[in-house]
Length: 78
Ligand SMILES: [Zn+2]
Image 1: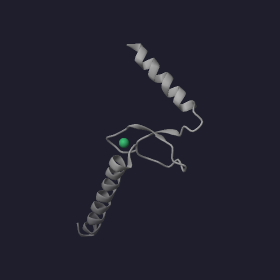
Image 2 (image 1 turned 60 degrees about the vertical axis):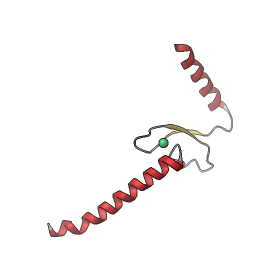
Image 3 (image 1 turned 120 degrees about the vertical axis):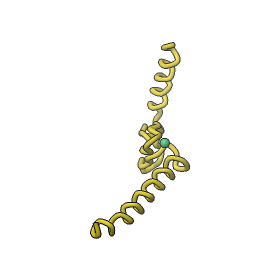
Image 4 (image 1 turned 135 degrees about the horizontal axis):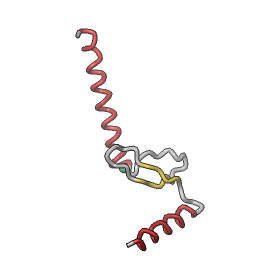
């Protein structure tokens, strides 16, 4: 049972040792927590997949901002 894990660790080590390997990062999308390899030149990737996690985070942020803006004028009244 330990063998597949050891093999995985070995392959990850070999993979990271490659000169072109990017930075191993954690996906910033909340329910994901996945790990991905940032091979972008700027090293500023924040999600494992822009199509799923990136869009989800952006939509969440957008909804939160809309909510915050909707709440603001009510504060003065109450
Ligand atoms: Zn993700």
